[in-house]
Structures are given as structure tokens and as C-alpha cells.
Length: 75
Length: 357
Picture (tube, chains in turn purple, yellow):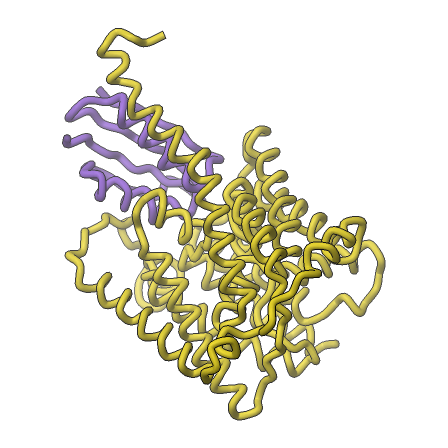
């Protein structure tokens, strides 16, 4: 299953809070795609993912001050 | 006057640039210690304090700058600090953070800064002045910690720097997790300035350097002090509504410079865009800004005035207000972040147990 999360307009730490909520609903091997525009989350979201054992499968800037990160739930 | 504008803007623009590129945010620094169990940014703020303390006491021993003895108003420091700490989570940024996010185009930060200026001005020279008078009446014996301890300031400068070095060493010796970063599109100096992820320790050291420079740059224009956000923000509003040019000092151009410097950094990095928060978030930001201005004015400083500058001078005010700010920040972070996360984490279990409502 792939879940798409759009947290545009959310500032830190809420992109992570929402990502964590969404992750909790998923099972192993599911994918979570997060679209966000909080500059600080370019640093904190991938760090949160790695520290929580999620795999970052893609990470790109999709526009002016807009980013997308794709995560896979490993455990 | 030209000197005031130029020196204030020079310091502000570089400060804003570094804050934006380094994502140097005191809310994250304080909050993540509690919420994410992550002390990287917090140690970054310690580096900024340590660097500044060495620089400022060196400059003052050569007579280049003067360090004003701030009265220790402990009730203001505790109450104001706590209220400021609560406000900075709701505002989505500390005082310096709101100024630099303003330059990134976040309208939520414009809203919170408006609240911040209004309540800070109300406490400093408006309708809430009696509250300030009352809360700052009880005073401690000594402005500086080292006076109470009967030692040279250099003892504390040395101890704090040592503590910071130990923290840095412990961080650098940990096995480093590889955090994926965006694929680079720029090269050379452009990559370093407008793309690369800055290590919070490096950013902290640069912030400390700017904080040192602020002292002589400000004193040249007749303003004795270092970096500051609260009084300048209140003065900006005061000048706008009264036309009193006395309020238009070095600090006002410093805060305006932060927004400009951050705008330059964000624009050149493809990180500027006007971003509008949902109505509920905007209201929360406004409330947070009002609390921040009220608290910072009572405490005699925000995360910069107290958290960065007063701590580096080893004043009682800074060392009492800063823990109060951190506690306020953690208090609201618990209700806003930790509890919602726990509830959501428990959700699938409840569903599995067939207890979902």
C-alpha cells in the first residue's frame, strides 16, 4: 500500500508529527510519500526517518520551497 | 544615522543568512532534546554561547566594549521566561526564528511577529507597563553569577567552554547515522552557501562570531549591548506609531536585517515562497506571538537576549530565564506534540483489539 501525505503549510515539528501518525497506520513494506514545504523539515524529516528505521527511497525538491520524500516502512 | 543603518543591517543580514542556511532554530534546539531525544542543535546553541563568552570577555578586558550590569529581576525571569517558552512553540518559531521565517515567506511568522511586537511594546512602554513594574520589583543581589561566587568571569567562561567541548566530543564520537540529503545541483561556493546542509556545530560557531561582532558594531552607534530581538521589535512598532526617531536604533536595523538576510539566502537556495497557514494555525501563531512578546519583555530578553547573550555574560538573569524558557517550551511541546503522537501510535492496537469507537 502507498499512502500519500500532504502537509503543505505545516511548520516543524508538525510534518514529523503527521508522518509519524501516518506511519503508525501502515504495515511493513508499505510506502509513505510526504509532500512538505517547511524548510527546516528538509533536515529533520530524513533524520527522523533514519533514526526510526524507515528507509528513504527518494528525496527531491519538487519546486520553490517544496519537497517530496518517499519512505518505506521496514519494521 | 547612516552608520546606525549600515552597521545594524550588516549584522542583521549576516545573522539572518546564517540562521536560514543553518536552520538554526532555538525552538527546535530546546524542543528536540525532549521530543526527539536529540541534542545536536542544543549543543550548537552551547557552542554559540561559549564562543561569544570568550570573545566578549576578551573585548571587554581590552576596553573595546563595555558590559552593562543588568539587574537580576528573578520573578520576571522565571514567569516571563516560562511564558515566552510556551509562546514560541505556538508561534512556530522563537523570536529570531520568526524574523528569519518571515524572510522565507511564511505568513504565519508575519502574524506571530505582529503579536510579538504588540505585546512587547505594550509591556515596555504601553498599557501593560504596570505589570512590568510590579514583576521586576524583586531583585537579586548581584547581576553576575561570578560576583556571587567570588571568582573571575574567566573561571565560568573556561568551565562552560570545557563543558561544551565535552558535549561536542561525545557527539562526534558517536557512530554517525547517514541521513539522506537532496541530490546536489550546484557546485563550489554556490553549493556551500546555497545548498549544502550546514552542521549545527559549525552554524553555532558562526552565530557566536556574529554575536561577538554585534557588541562593537552596536557600541559604535551608542547602543551598549549585543544581539537582541525583543526591545528592537518593540521599538520598531513604537517608531511606526509615534514617529519618535529615538527608537530607531541599531537594534531596529538588526531585526530588519535578519528578515532581509534570510530572504536573500532562501531566494538564492530556491527556498522562498509565500506560504499561507490554515486559519486555525494562523490564530495559534498569533496567540503564540502575543505570549512571546509579553514573556520576553517581562524576562528582559528572548531566546537571543537571554538564551544567547545573557547566558554568555554569565548574568543571573540569563541563567534563570533560559531554563524557564526551556521548561515552558517542553510544557507546551508535551501537549502539542508528544501526547498527539502517543495517541496516534496507540490507535492501530485499539483497532486490532476491536475497541475502536
